[in-house]
Length: 413
Image (tube, rainbow, N blue to C red):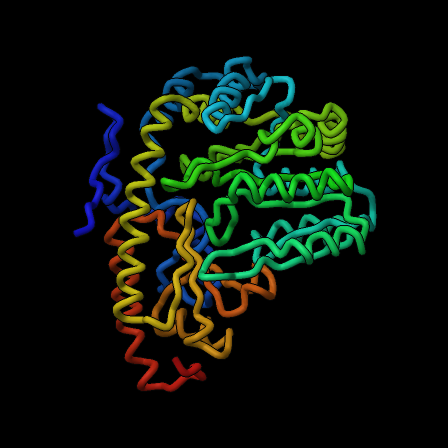
């Protein structure tokens, strides 16, 4: 029997992760955009990557303590915040100095700034779809050449197409690689040897690596996160790392992001890009939250979250196996986001979307937003209380009957 984690193991700050919390009337994007995105207010939203779980109480306590002071003026990031980032990255075997850190407003913002700073107009930038939508947008909206080498799904895990990657780099004279480590949307944790092989390709062809590592804290045992820049001094000089406590501690609303650049030229270029749009440091509450998150309590909170997410992933996997065997779950090795493969069940992507919204009453991330290789897929967010997941499964079960009553263009099993 699955063991359900009721509370986090953080002493006096223990909290029930299965306690439902209403987000209505809190300006929550996940809920307030239902009509605009799905054409209905009654869908259960399990799309955008924030949690329907509480921000840790030790972070809220730190924010309350700062708010006890009546002045919220211009703020300078203290040395202690830089040290918190360095100490947090050290747990992944990544030795960072404060001089290498530059704050952005979020990781997506960092992707756009990196493209602006490290490439010129019409330069080729490589991505590997299916991939987080801002990767492609950071390229095209900045008038760079988008080069895609799709990942290959083998035994329900994505693999890099090494031949295609090297050919693309050579053919298009690629200047920049936007890489997701761990991968979003599938939760794939890249092995050290894969990262080294990719990095050596980039070193050989002088391709700068921008590594989005925002999901790096949420890795399931026995997998381990390896920061790209930690592999060697040479690779660090060729890599710009982007990260944030936003996913791990549910802080997206505070807009916290940072870049780590071992190469002084890369950092200077990024600073210049920030200066052109007047981005300076983080806001006061973001600084307080970042420092409060990156501590020993933060590690214990993360471990409790991973137990909770594992329970939810197992529950969804079991349900699909029993009721929707044609739907394949791409088992995440990291993150609370789960990539669902409906291709055997639905021949038509629009029919899949219609069925999920109109019959299952679920609002999920559209696989096509991650590129053409996302056709037939959907991403579901399992950072929810168990009751929310059970409601989603109930609605899926009820929608199964609609397939028989109103035949859709289904593929045979």
